[in-house]
Image (cartoon, rainbow, N blue to C red; front, side, top):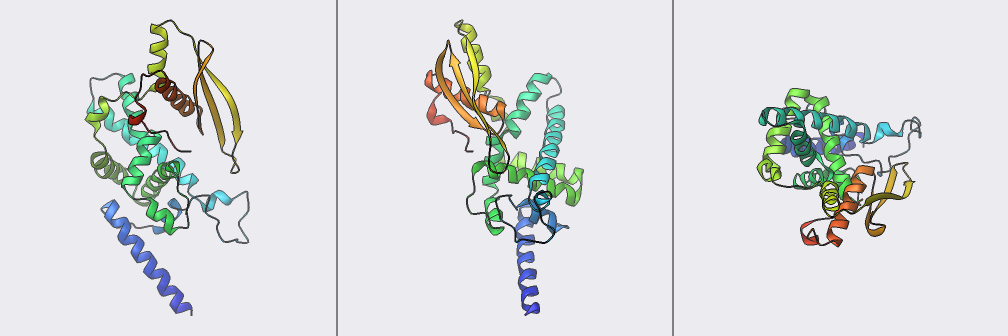
Length: 255
């Protein structure tokens, strides 16, 4: 019985290594990091005598997500700094935002088919936000497996150059709040961002509902786990209502 179980686990690991090798371009050395990267907190782990609320984060990908986010920011900052030697801080900041914002990360994760790994680890209902978070956790796993330099190479050559068109992104202005503020300044209108509701989810994540008022008239709202993102999405909805943005060319971020 134990031999049969061992063979099943071994076969599963071999299959995971094969799948990861296609994405990474190299054979992963520490498989447990990647397994953890694809374990979302919504997945109910089997109860263990050492598992409690105080250390439940050790059994999901949240810590790896935090690490991967920092690694991705650092790699993109260095890449842009070298690629655009004559551009100022404002341009570099905007470009980095375009490369690492939630919508971009969600799309990359989908193109990489990371949802297949999430399903293998027991996640059934997979949101777009979960996809982007998983990508960050995955990058955290890569970093712990092979270190910063190899992770940087992976991000630049197998993510940035494969799934993104940086020259196309140069022409895109997705700072909806900035666009709305410029419009209101031009026509001498007063814009105000109002927190309609601030709450916490069942897993203790903070959530914001932000509304946009222009000259005391309601022009849309949005909900997000990040206040700045909620303001951006609320601004986008306001621009659509004002007829300054085509609704068919934008996709509302899924929570």
